[in-house]
Image: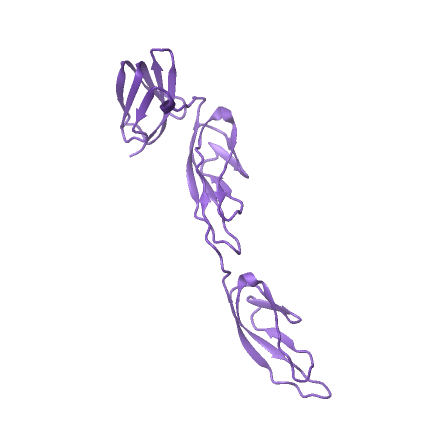
Amino acid sequence: MDFNLSEESVELTAVASSGLPVSYTCSNENVATISGNVLTFVGVGQAIIMASQDGNENFYPAADVMRILTVAEASRADQAIEWNQDLDYNISEESVELTAVASSGLPVSYTCSDENVATVSGNVLTFVGVGQAIITASQEGNENFYPAADVMRILNVFNNVDVSDAEITNVSVYPNPTDGEIHIESQVIIESVSIYNVYGQLISSDAVNGSLYTVNISDKVDGVYVMRIMLRDGNTITQKVVKQQ
């Protein structure tokens, strides 16, 4: 008697030659329970299922018949979490919906490593303060799916600093991420370059007056910075830069 926990229950089918009803007992109710002739699986493991018939005025009791019941772990499929959401926000945005999806279709839950930066309720991330935190997406599985591997994203909450994409303009900023040097190329003369941390604090500012410029942030801690590039034509480009070793 080999079954899978996901099968939940089965009808027992012993028959007495007398035609009298057969009763059943289970030696381990942590594995299975019996109601009438229905065997319900409770957990994985083994137990002895005994079929009995006590006889009556016309028949002697039948010899008991024993079977070994083995209940195996439920057959489950693998699943994965897909989550490509960029988690760089201004604190003025207040909140955002998290968008991770499990391949199983089961709901994804989230946790935040620092509730001084953000809190999570369901799939809504609410910003509390500026800084960085780790947002973890999880799916614990069920009887049909194994737990998914957690997926983590770095949340950066800025202090009201607008972040745009310099690549859509005539300005190139590279490499990004960087371990130190950042090169800026522009088709318009660069007037100045300023760098801010996620708290909106100015950490460096340089006059440039040229179309090529290199800034070095190797002495800064790893993390996300905002580079503000002022151009001679009056435009200002604001670009997120990631520094990591």
